[in-house]
Amino acid sequence: MSLTKLDENLQRIRERIARAESAAGRPAGSVTLVAVTKRTPPEWARHLAGIGQQDLGENYPQELWSKAAELAELPRIRWHAIGHLQTNKLKRTLPIVTMIHAVDSLKLLEELAAQKSVATRLERICLQVNLSGEASKHGWSAETIRPDFDRISQIIEYSGLPVTGLMTMAALGTDDASARPTFAALRQLRDDLSRDSGLTLTDLSMGMSGDFEAAIAEGATHVRIGSLLFERMTPS
Image 1: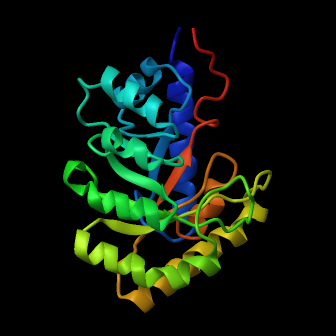
Image 2 (image 1 turned 180 degrees about the horizontal axis):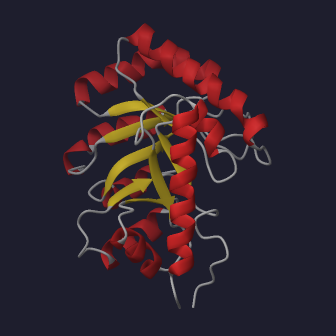
C-alpha cells in the first residue's frame, strides 16, 4: 500500500501547527508533535520515522513494547507513553520511553521514583489533571492536585524524576472553541503550581486531533495527534 497519504496528512498537520504557533506569537518549532500510532501497523510508524517524525506515542504498554521491539533498528525514535500506566507495566516500559504524559496518582509517581534507575531514556514526565471531570478520565482534579503537591515536590526532590509539566484532555465531543477554556485552565494551574512550589514546570501536554490549535494558542508544548494523521488510511 502506498503511504503517500500519510506523507500528505503529516505535512498538513505540520503546516497547521506552524500557523497556530505564528498566530499565537510563538516561535516556530515551539510545539512538539507526538504522532499517536496506537492500533496502527508497525510499518506506518517506521515510515513516519523515516520522514522525520521521530516522536511517536502509544496508549497501551503492550503495543508500545511490541512496536519498540519491531523498530529497534531505529534508535532515534522518541517513544512517548501517553495513556494510563499501571505500576506493574513500568519495568518493561521505563527503559523504552523518553516521555511519560499521564502520571495520574501519587502511587504511580512513587513507583516511578523507585524504578528510576531503569529509566535510561526518560527526559520528561507530565502529571495528568482531569479538568473535564469525566469519570472515564484518570488524574488529579484541579482541587486535589494542590494539597498533594508538597508530597509531589518531595518525591521529585529525593528521586530526581524529571517532572516537567502537566497534561490534560478536553471533554469528549468538544471542538477548538469549547476546549480552549480547559487548556487555559491547565496553563494557569501549571503557572500557579510552578510559582508556589519553585519547580520549573515548562511543559503542557494538551491538544488532540480536534482541538490542537486551541491548545497551541493556550501554550501547549506537546500535541498528541492520531486520527487526523491516519485519516483515510486503511491497513493492508
